[in-house]
Image (cartoon, rainbow, N blue to C red; front, side, top):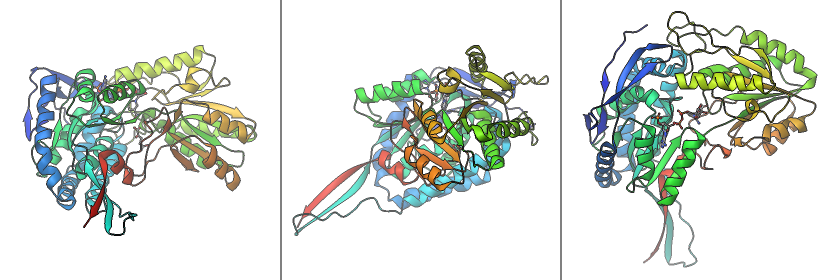
Length: 486
Ligand SMILES: NC(=O)C1=CN([C@@H]2O[C@H](COP(=O)(O)OP(=O)(O)OC[C@H]3O[C@@H](n4cnc5c(N)ncnc54)[C@H](OP(=O)(O)O)[C@@H]3O)[C@@H](O)[C@H]2O)C=CC1
Ligand SMILES: O=C(O)CCC(=O)C(=O)O
């Protein structure tokens, strides 16, 4: 394991690394070895946030005045610096929130690719020419930035999510105040350093760490923040929406999922089992796109379960920093307790536990590990079949027909991601048509978002907006329709 560092990570405000006015810090710890402090982050105050917003506001005019390609050049430089620091950032993310090094390296590469994608966006079109009814006039649309944008991010994708919000915000001419999740703020501090070292003008990106209520809530309520983009829990997302609505700010929310995978009678069982295991257990199930419900046609149910159990037993659990660990710990003690509680509720409510269900004992470091867990569920109304668990837990359900499978899959408050395994084109098309989810996957795992495509959910999974790819332009800009008569 790498050396333990207990460095103090400062806020980044107006181009400077500064301590909070509180003079207090909080610890970010390693969930695979809770005795290990990865770093101390600032426990910021409302005053710190106000300074960051003021800096972002002051930087706005000059930043939006640059051409898209000039802003893009800076994002290309950030990407190049991140490429040099890939190992350092990935290792920090693994130590800070637990997912394996293979996953954090992949995620850091994805962050770099997102930066390059949005750097290129600076050269692409921002509007359309629309024929006017007046043949002597020119009518067209153009886009302008919102102004200061507030970014509130979770710990489960500590590199990719902040970047897929910050990069489009910046390329379209906004300035940013970001509050990263406390459990992964050291990782974001390293990313903020890449922006600083790339020569981003002062005030264009500001990072303020600390409490969700004070800093995150402060962003939601701040009169000078014109747009808020958030990924995290439904409860917090809804509170942000209320605050934003009260003062007329734009908001975008990406929240939970209870993502189903349907395995039809004709499915390739090996392929389906592999995808279910990756979708449910990679990142210890802590993805909003994770596979949470597996709905299997009765004709292949027994064969599917047998293979699923056999393959799940092969999973190696351990600190993500070790190359032989396939699944790391839960990201925090809170997550660990909440997942164990959800498992207990499943047992109490009559679900049949067929694998796992217990803490995975780590006698060396007492990490927050939980065994990959599989339940058979007959009643789709119990909590384990309805609520987001955000841990390595599958609810398996048996159905007698594809109609029933789609009805069950749609019987959820959420609608983020959904997969089907089948070789039958009629079934595929019916699923594509009838499934209420923003991300539809056929013969592929439920997770796996591509940066150039729109990402977001239906129902309670999002605010019905989309992130990433070209869709980001819709949130981070306002359209102006221009009519010019010579
Ligand atoms: N859709 C997704 O990808 C995610 C879903 N979740 C779901 O949420 C559950 C709880 O995870 P948790 O980390 O507590 O998620 P939260 O929604 O609490 O945290 C997400 C972000 O919001 C901040 N925040 C917390 N409270 C407020 C507030 N009142 N106003 C504004 N911002 C706030 C957090 O700060 P701080 O870290 O300082 O608390 C963090 O930066 C998980 O079990 C999972 O079900 C969680 C993360 C990601
Ligand atoms: O599946 C992915 O790659 C992205 C998932 C995600 O956005 C999330 O878990 O918050």
